[in-house]
Length: 158
Image 1 (tube, one colour):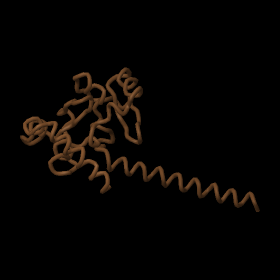
Image 2 (spheres, one colour; image 1 turned 30 degrees about the vertical axis):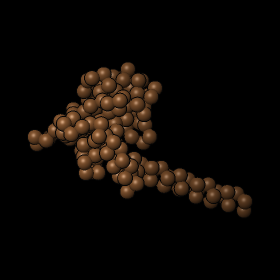
Image 3 (spheres, one colour; image 1 turned 180 degrees about the vertical axis):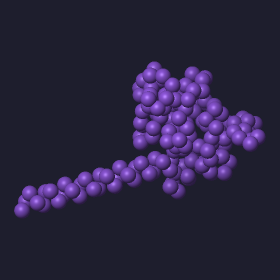
C-alpha cells in the first residue's frame, strides 16, 4: 500500500511540475516580443553591441529564461552565454518609445535600435514613423525613465 501512495504522490509532483513550466513559458511569451519565435525577431542580440545588425542562424541558438535567441556566429553565441542578461533587449524587446509614451507593447523593426548605458533598445519603424527618431528628439533619458516605470506597470498587469 505504501508503494501505491508514493506512486500517486510522484504523479502529482510530475503534473504540478509540468503545469508550472507551462505557466512560466506563457508568462515569458507575454513579457517578451517573440515574433518569429525568437527574441529580437531572430536577430543576433550580441551583434547590436558590435554596431552591426545581423540575422541569426537557427543552427546557432540558445535559450535564456525560456526565451530563444539566434546568433550570426558561434563566437556571438559564446559571448551571449557568458553574460546573457547584458544582451537581453529592454522592455521585452517591444518598442521602447511606445512603452514610454503609451504603456503599450508594440512590435519593432529589429534594424532600428540604440545602445544606451550598455542596454539594447528596439523601436518601431514603419509607414513613415520612426520611433527611434522620436525617442532622440523628445529626450532619450527622460523617455527611458518613463519607460522603466511603464514597463513595471505592464508586467504587473500580466
